[in-house]
Length: 292
Image (cartoon, rainbow, N blue to C red; front, side, top):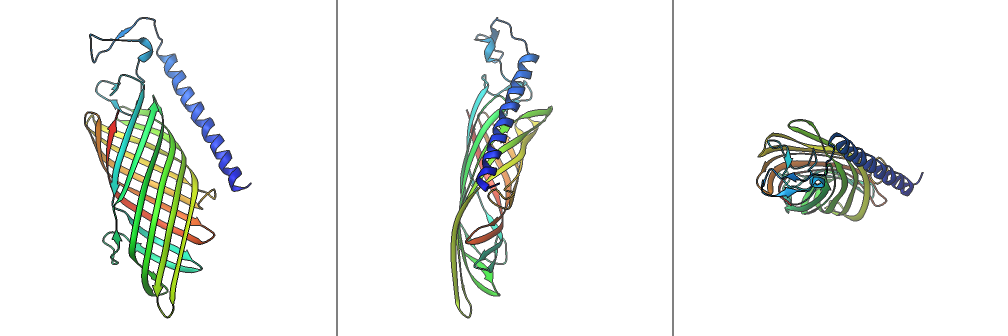
């Protein structure tokens, strides 16, 4: 089976799972909440009547535990999340059979010059199901690298993007959990230059698409405080040989906006035509989410 065929099979299976899960969730909700033809009064504004078909979902990504109602009166939601990270990179990159040992983490013995990594994410959903996309950019220059016992310079420019379909279910009163399926696209533009007996210089550029599956959710001990978590795994020979990602963040929820401080770790093992890339990327992040 070729790589394109495997990607096509994954897309079809993911689409079927998304359709089946969302259809089953909506059907079970409709069955458990019979609808009458009378209008209901909106408890948040007793003077305003809400049509019966505008009844909110049982579970929403932004549900208020105390009132058991979403923050919005309708089933749909949208959010945008700009953020900023302080990335660190460690691992091995192989150029023409030469292994470059990279250690460009904050606080490491080597002293890299690392630019902040900006990013942005968007998510739109209806009831339990949502579609999310994000993009992060990393530009690291003049980072020290060791190759065959000699020190040199390593440059890295990297784009990371995710597109996922997500489902959210409430397991207990304070815990939300749901599956994630989608794709991760990574583009790497990298180079190394080492002066030993001879000058060694090499560069490579490549991009690949990984199918991913995972879980995400929130623990909400209070209405204004939450712990967000996320994990995925992918690749398995489709794009990279293997990749995985973990994230945890502590957030404060205000009226229409969330502030979240977290840590993200991404590992990628990629065997390309021009270079091999086996690298860990860790980044503390600060994200502000605007909810609509």
